[in-house]
Image 1 (tube, rainbow, N blue to C red):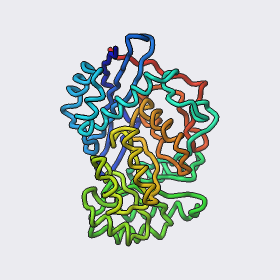
Image 2 (cartoon, one colour):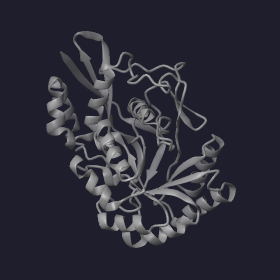
Image 3 (cartoon, helix red, strand yellow):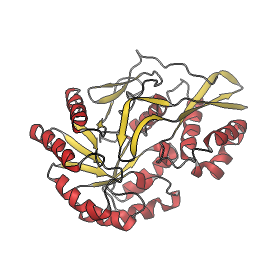
Amino acid sequence: MLKANFLYRPMIFKRPAGTSRGVLKTKDSWFIFIRDSAKEDKVGIGEVSTITSLSIDPPDKIEAELQWLCNNITNANDWIEERGQQFPAIRFGLETALLDLKSPKSHIYNDTLFTQGKSGIPINGLIWMGSQDFMQTQVEEKIAAGFNCIKIKVGAIDFEQELKILAGIRAKFNAKQMELRLDANGAFTPNEAINKLQRLSVYDIHSIEQPIKAGQTQEMAWLCENCPIPIALDEELIGVEPEDISLLLKEINPHYVILKPSLLGGLEAADRFIVEAEKLDIKWWATSALESNIGLNAIAQWVFKKQNPLPQGLGTGQLFTNNIQSPLEIKNAALFYDHNLHWETISPK
């Protein structure tokens, strides 16, 4: 017999995180705890992580939905079929909590070279939006830390200043030495996008995520066909029904898709995007959506099994003042599972 409850624990940023949608100081996270009465000493923990204005889970209904789910945890499969598509973050938390419950060791879903601490996952360094000096400082920190792939948020400060930052990087590092990924978070209008992308392209950009807002299928398809920079879909994938994935990818035909399991409805949902993308020769990588180390750990273990050679977007574990202590550690621009470090014990009050 399964029992479940949950805990709300908002994550607090060490420093405000700037995006084109605004500045984040905190973000919401809930943790689902599932126990089996046959083995009370074992608990499965999953994270429900949402981002304001990006996650489609209705923010005013999450706690009520979590309470209902916990009260009816034995009917979890029915909930997934009937309600899961409306609450992708809860679905991710439920799926990973059940995986954790079934695993022989807490927080280790798969016995791999990653969870054995013998192999890491290459990741990109993330540069947040802010003043030119702030962004330049972050770039220098990531380069000093050994990153040869960095992702820069663009679209919030003056465009000319953003170009200067990119020019400064390219004055020191060519494309072979430093891969530059950009993320516009839909900041450009369809009318201005091609001009801005052409100006950005002189800096040997690897790719740009979501140059225009999601939902403009024809405009995005045109950009993918005509833009000098390879385009990656990100927000465009959120809320897409499983039966519509193939059609969307065929219509837009992007170069890459960015997979954030807690925004897409879980690991199995992300798997569906991978299957359809690979049919069309569309490459992909995964990115954490500002989860704590609980959610990040689940995504990292799932990604490692895919053996995707591209740097992944899994470097968010150091963003919060109150993150869950864990064995996850960044070394040499890669994410490792270090067994010399231990998981913080968390439980519902």
